Image (cartoon, rainbow, N blue to C red; front, side, top):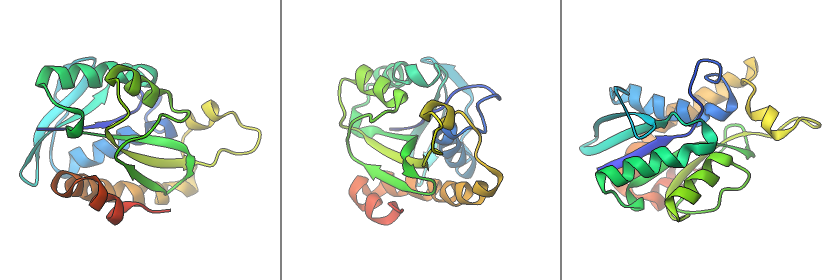
Length: 187
């Protein structure tokens, strides 16, 4: 069993924001593979299903971004899953919009959701998909930038990234991180 987690903030108010790109990514995976977020536990909303023969749990933490690690830790503990079975999708202000960066480990940068994951998981060694939402406009605070919606002329680029998410997830499950990096990392 694998866990694919998208980071974001719950509620309609946050749905169109840049900070919810991780939620959008995992929702697209769920839609394509017909996995419903039908269960609420571990401070998250999740669904069980299958992607190309691999049993998966898709998770959206409901703790708000800054406490995302609580939901991930709770789910991993309940199912007794190691970090090697975890893939996290999240927004990254340090990457240009449209950029996809897959990594097998790393720090949190300025991302509070990832800081929470690293603190609760006690490790930086888990796969992640960084989804570019930058650069922030000059004079705009980074927190303000990620809490704003994508601009109308940016949605085509957002959609081009989201289209790749189900294929990326299937590749990671079947082939692992490095082959998936080679196939899907883009500027």
